[in-house]
Length: 391
Ligand code: RFL
Image 1: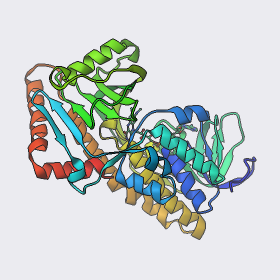
Image 2 (image 1 turned 45 degrees about the horizontal axis):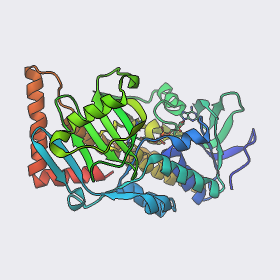
Image 3 (image 1 turned 45 degrees about the vertical axis):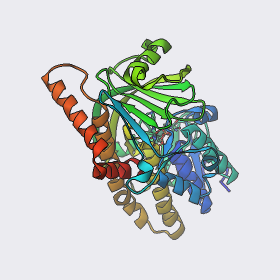
Image 4 (image 1 turned 180 degrees about the vertical axis):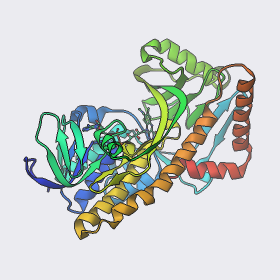
């Protein structure tokens, strides 16, 4: 059972942030009897309602299932094993479930996963404080806006890429490797069934368009747009017209339209902290590194890191041995960089130049050469499948 939230009480682990990383970590710590508290800036409704990711890699599903967190996704998640590419040169489907290691994705909206994780965390007796903003993080102590400090043997920063934990590490000299992909997406959630049985990637001179299933009645679409665009500039009519053009519906058939539930603009940026922690402060998920959504890796890296960090913290608190924490960085970073490399490759594949000069023509020809290689080379397809589903 969690300790009561009284000033002066020292927790085993103070977790900042109730996203996928913080909630997986909290559940795994409770499973081993480690007392912890989660401090979350937002209210419960906002945390449970935030639609973001949807594609869970096989590794994430295994981790969640092994730790008793997979009932919801087993019941309501949908297996996806194909993706489809459209361009001016036609369309092809990759059955990645038959390629590489034969792994598949489970499509399960992030907000449903967060709801499941939170319900299980509370069922296990976990302590959580919503509406509690952490202003400053130091080793073993966090300062809460308008409240008393909270202390723990360890602090786990799972507060996303703009959180206080990352700022604390940066202030201590931890360096960041950073990349701006120079691309912006309008991310749209619509009340309509998926139009394709697969993930759809459309390459077009006007910019990339993407189609991703979420549930039987909700679909996510992406439209590459100029940086600095305001979502308000994109009316429903404009969104559907642009999707129809880029997804070449005149050639391949109409999309199932519906009302727009949500539209946000996402600048595709990536970064990695060169060391995700030190001493009594350790980071997981977007706090430790942000990955552009082009290959749907973010939530999967969050689950991977939370699981590795949980193991290390259980060892540190249970056996007084912090060797696992030292290895946490060297254990995770190579996998994190593999995911970034693939995500960067996907970004180059999906986003060609939109101008019409000689350099643009060269860039577009490279984009088509890449796509052609993926369409025709079994070796390339196996490599794609391994990286697309792996983590
Ligand atoms: P989160 O989910 O951002 O959670 C951090 C939590 O910390 C809280 N917080 C604080 N609490 C207290 N004090 C503070 N000072 C705090 N500062 C922040 C926040 O309120 C929040 O609740 O981070 P986490 O747990 O690391 O999880 C990361 C994932 O959410 C993220 O990587 C994915 O959503 C990325 N992503 C995708 N990943 C996938 O694996 N597959 C996908 O299909 C996929 N699609 C996406 C995505 C991200 C997107 N956006 C919006 C960038 C699609 C989109 C559009």
